[in-house]
Every structure is written in C-alpha cells, then in structure tokens.
Length: 72
Image (tube, rainbow, N blue to C red; front, side, top):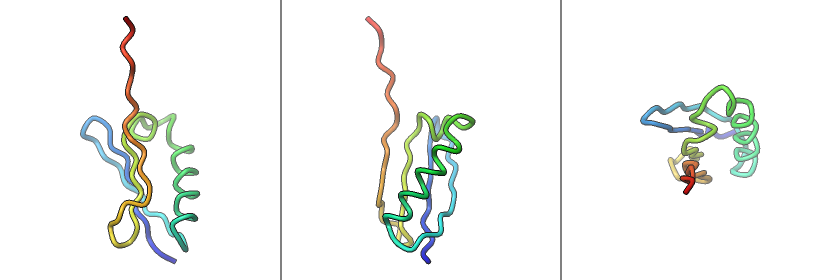
C-alpha cells in the first residue's frame, strides 16, 4: 500500500487527508468518496482546488477552483 495525500484549498485555508491505496486509480476512487463525504460540510471540497498527490509528491489528479459566473 502507498500513502497518497488529498488536499483541498479554499480562501487560503487548506485541509489534507492521507489515503492508503495500492495504485493511482484506487487512490482516485477513494479520493472521490472522501470528497463526496465532505463537500457539503466543508467548502474547501465543494468550491476549492482539490489535489491528489502520490507518495513522491507528484500530482496524479487535480480539480480546479469552482468559478462563479457573474450575472449580467
């Protein structure tokens, strides 16, 4: 098993969680479950930038910050 790091950043606040997975695909699936479990209670997961890094610190998955469109 490898330890991946899932981080979510919004308004200069960051939270991180460790994910134990055997490969990148498994880590992504587990990350989606963690995001779904936290996106309502924590805006960092709902609107912030979410990054998943492998044990070497390489980004394996990244979701950009949600951008709100201005109404005209």
